[in-house]
Image (cartoon, rainbow, N blue to C red):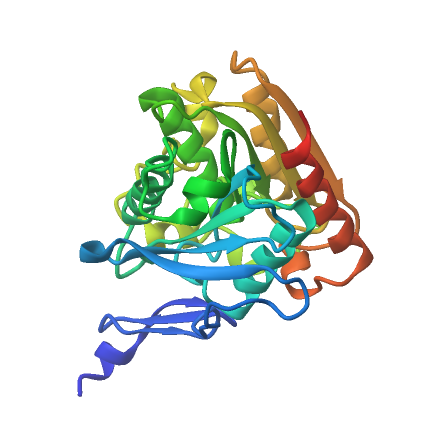
Amino acid sequence: MDPKATEIAHDLPPFLRAYTDGRVERFFGTDVVPPSVDSETGVSTKDVAIAPERGVSARIFKPNTINPDQKLPLLIYYHGGALCLGSPYCTTYHNYVTSLVDEANIIAVSVDYRLAPEHPVPVPYEDSWAATQWVVSHSHGQGPEAWLNDHSDFKRVFLAGDSAGANIAHNMAIRAGVEGLGVVKLSGICLVHPYFGRREADCDSRGTGDSLVDKKPGVDNKWLFVCPNTSGINDPIINPAADQNLRKLGCSKVLICVAEKDGLRKRGWFYYEVLGKSGWGGALEIVETEGEDHVFYLFKPGCEKAVALMKRLASFMNQD
């Protein structure tokens, strides 16, 4: 075997390693929790195939505290993982969305998009848009899934995600504003510890995410890994300031959550400032968790600050 074929091409410790021969080893998010009724919360889950020919699917979550004719807010969730890790079916995201559904008393659809580098950008975004449109196809009560037909309030639809998933949520809201979602109008989006690119000037000395620091001028190495054909730091997917459609963001309110020790903290604040100056007319709010790092709540879900953050997200989706 050619030793060069087994050289490491990209390393994202301790989560992923990619080799020059095309092999990818993932050390996070590969486990699968079967759909079931959660013993602690009573939240029920089921899996659906959205576009089997292209491998797009989702997990639907329904709380147990629901009447037969009750309509609940509907959340479409896009998981994080740098566009190359994770799924709705892994323990981390299954448990997180289950807890959020229980706390907020909502219906949720957690999207399983195809992952880079095998499926580089824009594939994860196109898959996410296909899933979003599939959800919207239930807005007249005649879609293929009864849980969405019977229990979803399509006048209260939200998009949310963490890290790269928050970036997807933002881009889906932009596309909704430009192309529309039929009769559905998004109520809001929740961007938790969002990823909007990374430049050396944006490195936060309080952050611990050294693997995110630039390896090439203009744009961080992680983005080049998932989007090798990027135009650079002015790619509108990761730089909202470069997006001419930013003011068309298709929702009425936005909640941004950042963490004090997160290496992406500055980019979250950057998004807040740029959106606020864009001419978009919605309500904009940002909250910062002190003393915590990137997506801390996924790995310390029972800590006081994680509980507070979840209650804030639940409140956002239940406010008039």
